[in-house]
Amino acid sequence: MQLTEKNTWHQVETLVVLKSFLIWSFTLTVCLLVIGFPLIVLMMTVGALLAVILHSVLPVSSVLLVAGSMISLNLLAVFIGAGLLTAKGIHPQEVSWLRWLHGEDKPANISVYASCPLTCELSRS
Image (cartoon, rainbow, N blue to C red):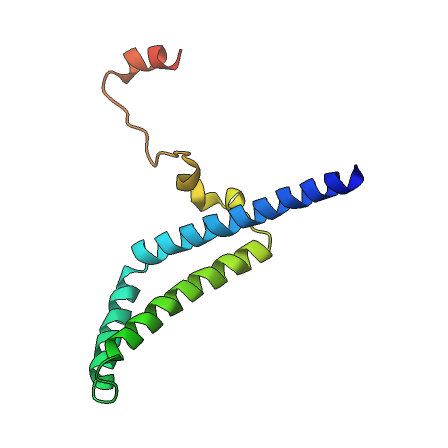
């Protein structure tokens, strides 16, 4: 009886860690694509130049080699970051700037209309 209880608790803990890792990897991938777009453009420019340079040495597989290495380096960076955040015990629910991930909305400003003194009291009730 005790063995199954310990095993169930361990499975739940493993699922929480796996969920945290997957959410972190998704979040870091989105941040890399959206916020890091200039960095991606710079990496692709360097990659294109590197593929042209390598074309004289490896005529068939230079583009495949460069594209594969750049994609794998980006994925490796995202997974290492997600692994470090998960290993440190930082859960996505604890991070304040991840409100968009949980569906919570915090408006930056509240609109005030000319008729607000007359109608604002009614909308709050």
